[in-house]
Length: 258
Image 1 (cartoon, rainbow, N blue to C red):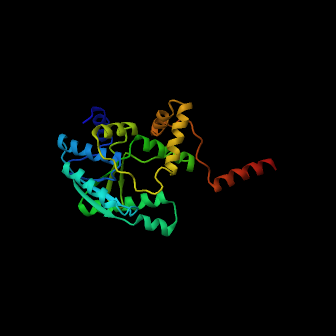
Image 2 (cartoon, rainbow, N blue to C red):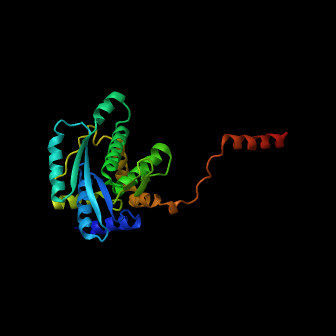
Image 3 (cartoon, rainbow, N blue to C red):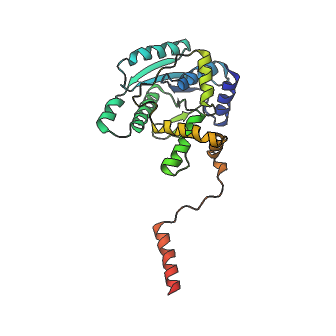
């Protein structure tokens, strides 16, 4: 395995204590470059590390593509070569999107996560591994700031109390270009996303915006990544007062002036 990839993944595993002895980890495998790298890396580390854990992979068929079975067969072969159990689970996300007409990205993510968490519980996997990398985290952070005024992003490790499943993201220290370089060198067959709006999402807009702003502010990405840490918070305004608090203070001003 590439030393850079291994060192960054190991940093994430160690810093956030992602794996315990006896874990069964279910990998969300879409067939994109990120999930292929995640699956391959965890398979290598499974055989190298002192901690003993097992792996399974799950591919969600969102019903966007009638020929999905062709790609599914390729993913099964990929997993077989790594000695990883592979499952395919169909979820009619396309139908739900047509019926509800709501935000397609939110709907897709929600139903994917729900299905993965359910399958994890069924097969006794206490951990679910997703292939989000550092670019994903920074884009989520920046998108949240611009769209909701909140400083938030996904966590490298998070416990879901409803399902008793812990989500881990071992690639959080890898840049997207590092993932792409490794996957290309390994000649992995990266599958095209079946998403009908792939490349035209809000996330893609944010990704492009970071690139453009980076031409003006060369350290923008690094600064955004640093800003995600809790200890990076400088001087911010106090939280807004409640309506009741404001009312009490307001009348203190009015009465004092009479």
